[in-house]
Length: 315
Ligand code: PMV
Image 1 (cartoon, protein in one colour):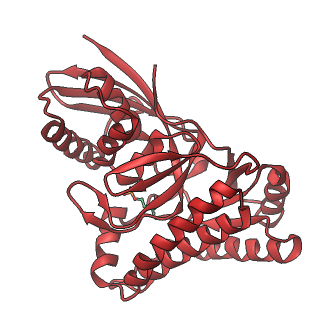
Image 2 (image 1 turned 90 degrees about the vertical axis):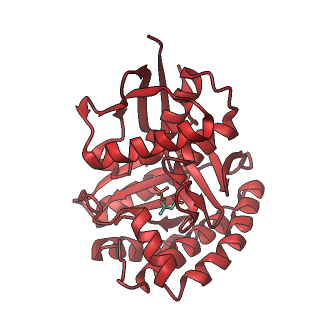
């Protein structure tokens, strides 16, 4: 039986997606923009089989992961008109210390693999829409370097040649998040008085970040990323029940990034997603300064650094 091996890296949003226009097909309410992370992702083998099966790192998937997988496959079978059952074996090479969710890289790798396995003939943009059925942010992992996601599709973005940036990931906590991003988004959309503000500003932030990427304006890109992050977390924080993914230690790390900017200028900006970990965006030339600064001030925290990485690939 035919087997396809594919891989994809995780990505971090610089302009955040939060809220769904369609919760069945994962159509985002707002546009988002991301950086794909080098070397932090998933490798997947897919093959047709008599039943849908999923193993993660050589173990049968948890009920939760399996249900997500079946849900993805059922939607894919309906929209892309195939009947095959798929057996998938995924391996994450995201070190524990990176503290990143693997759903974006998993569904991106899976979508790329299924496209090839079943000869669906989809181009990269169309495969991003298939990946989106599993997790909206997965659509962005199809692309190398930087990507945008608007409604159904993601597409690649080219950064200015002088914009040489990367991320330092600060692992505040290794605990699994208590609330899924899907549930958290729904609560925020339905109850937060600040969601409308986040929603409206997201379109401006998206255009501003796109322009900053194109012109190579690092401080503008960083500032826009922080604004999008703060507005997203503020909308969650003002929802009922209140959602707070950040921990006291996350806030402490953020405080130190402000302090670093006071001391050395606009060299580092933070972001955080549906979890407590802090990701710092900075220029590659400041790689060691950022690493040492965090190490000195937070000696017990794990840190991972990552360059912009490649999009999903099939072997
Ligand atoms: O695609 P999901 O369901 O994993 O949601 C991602 C949400 C954020 O990571 C918080 C923002 C983003 O754009 O990636």
